[in-house]
Length: 475
Image (cartoon, rainbow, N blue to C red):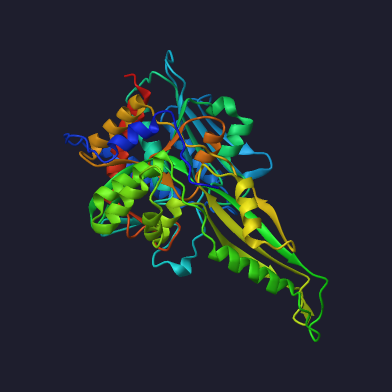
C-alpha cells in the first residue's frame, strides 16, 4: 500500500479551501420553550433509567420512545415498533413525519438506544439514573448516545405539536446493538425493512460534533468519513507434548514472535480529503512545529518527516494510517502440557482507502511465518467517504452558526465506528453531527461517571430542532 488520495466529487475543493474559515457572527438563536426543555429533560431521565446493555436489550426503551410519539399524535402507521424475530428483547422504533407532496427523497436520522456496560461499584453516582449536580448530568448513555436520542425525540415532538409540514418525509430510527452484540438495528433495517428507512441523506448524531477545551470551542466537525474496523485471528498450532520435555517449536513462543512483529510495524501514511481538511483546521489552532507539521501532512503528497513527528501522538498517528493492535490472547490447555494451540485477536482500524484483503496480506507479510495462520474473525463493513455538496454544506453550516456563531467548521473522520457504516455501504450519503458538545480533555463516553453539561444539552436541543427544520424545509 502506498500513499494515495481519494477524490470525493468536490469534497476536497469544498472543505480544504474553506475548512478553517469561520462564518460571520450571527445572532444566537433563542432557546426553545421551557416546556420543550422540560420534555427533553424528562425523556433523558426516563431513558437513562432503562438499562439497555446488550444482555438487557432495547425493547423496554423502544416502547418508552413509542409511547412518547403516540402521546404526541403520531399514528400507528407513522410510528412503528419493530422487534427482531431472533432477538425478541431488541426493539427498534421507526417514525415518519410526512410531507404533503414530497419534493425530494427523505432524510433519515439514526440513533442507537443501547449502551456499554457500567458497573455501579466503579462509579461515584448510580450509572442507570440521571444525577444532576453543579451543572453536569451524569449517567450511562448521557453522551453516547441517549442524550442525543432524547434531543432528537424532543425536537421532533415539538415540530409535530407546532404543525410543521416538511417538503420531504423525515424519518427517525431508534435502534439496537450499535455498541456490541449481533443484533444491530440499522443493519437489520437496511436488510429487511429498507422501504421504511430508505432515504437520500442520513444524519447520525453519534459522531462528529463540537469539542471544547477549557470551556472554549475548538471546532465543529461534520463527520463525512470513519475508519473501518476488521478483526483477524492469528494462530499457531503444535502437536504438543509433556511439559517435562520442552520442544523448540512452542506454539506460544511462535505466537509471541508474530505479535512482536505486528507491534513493531507501522502502516504507510495515507490521507483523504476529509483528513487533509481536518489537519488544516488543526494547524490553524496549533503553533510552532506542530502547526507546520499539520500543514505539511495536509499537502499532496504528505510530508513523511512531518507525519513521523505527528505520529508520536497516538491520536494523530491513528488519523494518519491504518492501525492494527492485539486485543485478545489465549493459549495452552493444561499447566503440565506443551501448548497445542495459541491465538490472538488483532483488531485493525482501516483508512477508508484500504481493504480487508490488503490489510490481511500485509499482516501475513509482516509476520512472515507459514506456521502462523491468519483468518478473519469479524469481517469489515466497507464504508466509503460521503461527498458533501456545496448546497448541503451551506445549509449545515448555517444551522451550526445559528447556534454557535463564528465557530470553525471542519471535515471529520471518526477513528471509531458508528452505524453510518451500514447506510454508507448501501450508497446513502451519511453525516455524523452530534448536538451536544464535549470536553476534548475529559471525554467520558464509555467511561466512569459519563457526563454532559446541562448548558450544552439545551444548546444541542435548539441546534437539533433547527437542523430538522432546515433539512425538512416546509412550514
